[in-house]
Image (cartoon, rainbow, N blue to C red; front, side, top):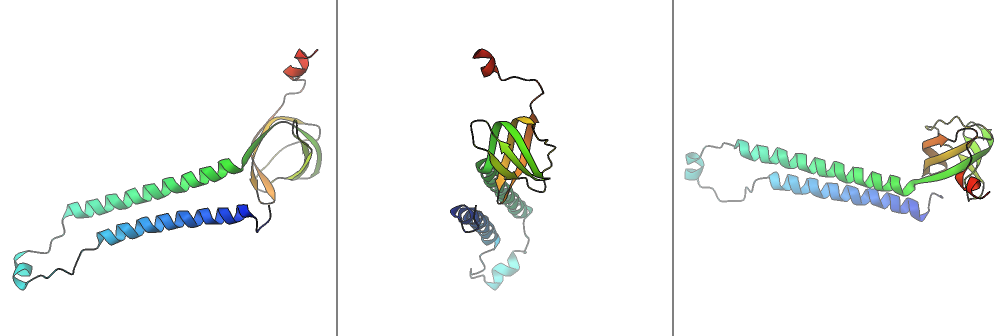
Amino acid sequence: MRYGSLYSVLSAMSWLVSLSVISLCIWIVLRGSKRNTSENVTTEDFLAVPKVRGLGEVTIWIATMMMVLAIGLALGYGARDRELSGNTQTYTDVAVLNKMADREFLVWPDRMRQQHITICPESTVAWRVGEVLKDWTFEQRQGCKRVVSYHEKPKGETDAAIQIGR
């Protein structure tokens, strides 16, 4: 995907929306914790009532901040999970046709065309030419694929559909 594509614009906007929601929550909490000092207080009232901040008020403020933090974490986790599930794909019966470099392969997923792929640097694979993978799950990133998981097909295993069709 190109840098200026619609996908990259929408990705940037999702972070902007998340940041706006979190900022709004923090603003609401901080604004609610300030006391209203615009009330007219007479000298007699000021001397009669000692200035003591109740423990209940502090406890409520701490609990509110913890809830805002928990909501922010949940929203962030949910946004990342949604982004990850949108970028994750699984191919079955993938044949490794050629290995051009340590991270570049020519693969042929079942019922698809051959693909020249580049594996991301944080992924490690031990694929050999001629190997068939039972399944391969990856996350599509810009310019490379991050391998989530893969399972090699045992040697000599035959597809059941071929056996039935005899």
